[in-house]
Image (cartoon, rainbow over all chains, first blue to last red; front, side, top):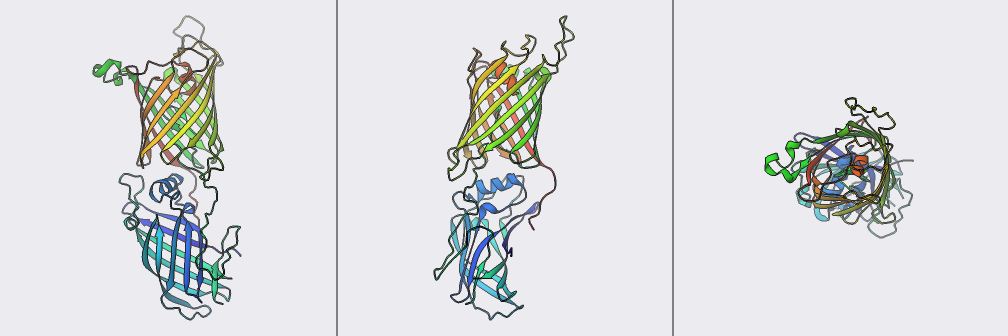
Length: 158
Length: 291
């Protein structure tokens, strides 16, 4: 079984659009206690250009100091999940990146794929200035102030 | 028991009881230190900075005449530049091959760079270590001379360099590079000052970051087995738009490793020369998609 959680940060600037991708999202959903906890090692984000990745890590995300993006929160109303049915959920919690923590709301979809597996898709927006990530003025790639984060994960029952 | 846990590809199993959060673990325990230097070269000397797999690095290097002419010669810019074009292609993260051509004596050089060790953030590996070996040939036309035109082998020269570097902090990186150059026949008609076959030197390179995209740079190359003046240089690296601009003052006008060691240097001060390198990387091959 090889399942994984995928995360994509999409940067849509006027002239250049690129994505930072990682499939090493780690996390858990505990429906009994109503707990959501996800984190990503930002060192694993790849945009397809090595130099851009290195600059992203060193100058913007500063992954040596702040290696993780984290989300810990709760589901607003826990739906009753039935096999093969997708349910809209709203998660509320703390998102932390670049050493800055903020309360966010994330709409997403939960689906029981089988009795052992649950799939989760969600996307939300991150404003870089909210997390003190400054945008370079002169660069060979343009970085959008608003980043779209897409999450696509399959969780296994423990 | 509606508990679900993300299956992960790592070797450690995530176990949790009744406690809340997952333990935060890095995907790679020993993260490699990156961007020790801005480019494969720091002023004149090759560094431990690797190129990405299947990328082509192009650099155009210039040095002008000495500053001592003052404004009359626009601080050496009127004296004609020595220009070196440099191409380097990375076959892997560890190995690249390069070719350069220096205008002075029309020297073509082929070299390889090999990266053996990489410094890691947890200091399990405290330094980065690379090697460089190169061979060059002087293709200048000496037929106007009455004497014998030097043969191919008499025109050949070789260089070898070990680069040991450490990024001491986000700002400061230093590199020590023992250097060796060998001229098969150090002919007086070549534009070098030395008259020996073998030249040994110890290169010291430094980078001090002053902002996200700019650093102060320095180099000092004391000679170990001859009386030629030592090379001193200092400058600034600027990253802009995918290029790295390297501007510097240096005591030697020469650019390839062999000539750098045998070519002699002016006195620091009036005999500094203005120089600059422009670096650019081109990605080749197919972009891999991770999906």
